Amino acid sequence: MSDLSLATYAALEAGNLLREKFGQLAVVDEEFHHDIKLALDKTSQDLITKILLDACPDDALYGEEGIAGNQESDRQWIVDPIDGTVNFFYGIPHFCVSIALRIKGEIVVGVIHDPMVQETWTVEKGGPAMHNGVPIHVSNREKLEESILFVGCGKDGDALRTGMERFARASLRARKMRMMGSAALGMAYIASGRLDAYVESRISLWDIAAGQLLVETAGGKVCLTPSPQDADAYAIVASNGKIPIEEIL
Image (cartoon, rainbow, N blue to C red; front, side, top):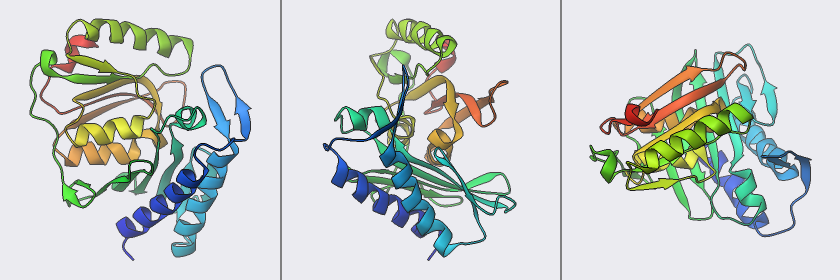
């Protein structure tokens, strides 16, 4: 089984679990002002970890719910077992599983799976970006006035303030604004031409690793600025590469 096929299989299996559990009373492990951690986050990551590391026991895994495998390996799976946990908890069917493979620091495989809509985005370095097996491309829109933008607001005070200021500026220019609750799905939507840009001042690697390769392969652009405070956290600007996104930053 190829790395892409393995990642896709793991994402689909985790998606089956999430779809089965959706709408049921979820056990909350941790609860914060702007976030929730569910027991199901860990259960989903454990399932993905078993599938990936049973097939590739010498690999490393780095996920939102912790690490596993050989952390000295050049091959590292990057996993978000539920991107959009708060949506899931509140019964909003907009969340996904995101899996990427990074080899010697380069993302070479990405899979984003939405189990509720049954949509799967896949990409492998050197190959096309795909949506349910069909090649995709970013939108051709060039004007902010024609665009739909996804602006995230993060979870801390500074990120929230920055996000809301950007949202206000962009609202005066863009056709529509969205705050959707899943960075990975937002990037998948950019790759598919549904959205035109995504901006957030602080996001974690597991949220955007698969999406970065997907957007860039589909013809878009992704700019990541490392956080000075947190390892593997970034400010992100992802777009179709055509609209003047710098005008709202």
